[in-house]
Image 1: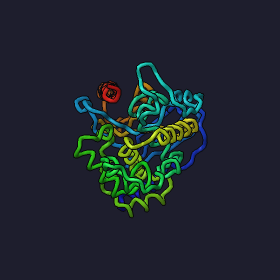
Image 2 (image 1 turned 90 degrees about the horizontal axis):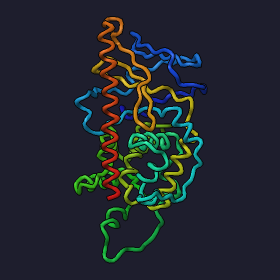
Image 3 (image 1 turned 90 degrees about the vertical axis):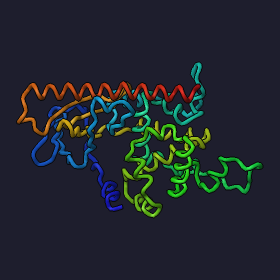
Image 4 (image 1 turned 135 degrees about the vertical axis):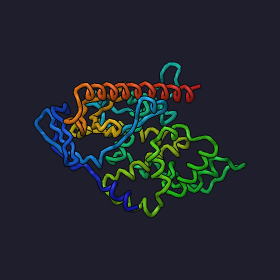
Length: 326
């Protein structure tokens, strides 16, 4: 639990608004810090130990890969120009956008599954989306279906349309896993699921006291997906509206996202747009000791890996969409 609290306390301090996120210079120093200079002359230091680390390679990119990155500025600006609309939208040959959480957010945000994850996480982190909001609360009732339905048995103790209580949420997750009903939960980062499964209700209550707790955000996202098939149109509209509002107010002062590719000794500044991840800058821990040829070889390999991740993610997402609409 101590590790969880430490992760929750890690919070990017409020910084001045920046006009451009273009990275002018990035260095990997001997003090285990990544030094970044932006186009507006602002400078930041990122602790390498607190950044996301990965060993992803070309051979490993055969299934969905999630990397936590900020959204690309042009994509955010397009969302800011989109009016927040929670009304039902229909597309030729497709169901109503508010029929499922997947379709509601996909047709509103565009992009693929990584957009869904990043935008949902951001709306939870900033507090726009709250799984205990009034519209998420189930009405009190003594009514019981006759005969007893499976969904009633599984949700009758839920206070909200998603299982807020850890014990109930984990119980439903395990039922779904045993019944092969996990769906997109199979594509949630493993570390999110592991965290969700090991945190008790009392530990979850402690996380709620931490402002912008990343641990709580990750758990709440899993809970939303665990209860996604029980959401009504009202709840889907609420979630959709809060995610879009969070995107419209997306902070322009977001620091660049840096991913550590451990197998290349590389720090890669990345962002996410509708086509997938894009590489903005690459620096190496051993840059002073490697040849230009070695440096270029690593850069080419990293770019190929990111391209492969985007291709696989797109294919996996399209297969998921087909399974929902067939």
